[in-house]
Image 1 (cartoon, rainbow, N blue to C red):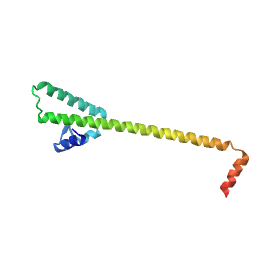
Image 2 (image 1 turned 180 degrees about the vertical axis):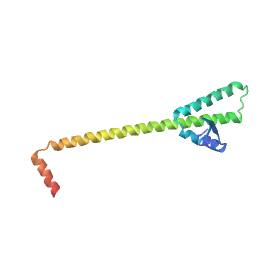
Image 3 (image 1 turned 90 degrees about the horizontal axis):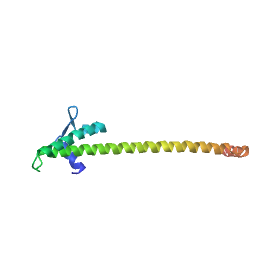
Image 4 (image 1 turned 90 degrees about the vertical axis):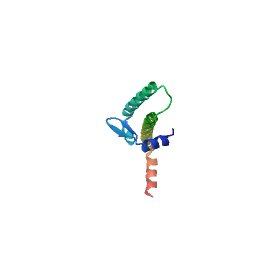
Length: 129
């Protein structure tokens, strides 16, 4: 199943998930990763029960829906984790950039402070022109 396919199936069949009542596929995006993991565990245990109870390999409509639900939750969790990691990296880069800019500013000021009186006067004279 492709990502587009599972979302198409979910929206066409109006799949609902058991979480504090029934929630839609779109509502999964609003849940925390921990809540999604809880839903996944419930779905996974249902899947194990279905596989244990049947002697036949034929999949029912409910079995296929269960597969779609599991894939949806997996996809959303992996997407949320990737987004969280990207945010963490972006924050770390921003902090590093800010730190470098502060050090650069300090070094530029030190360089300016180390100039002689004549050099500073010459610099002022050039700025007045």
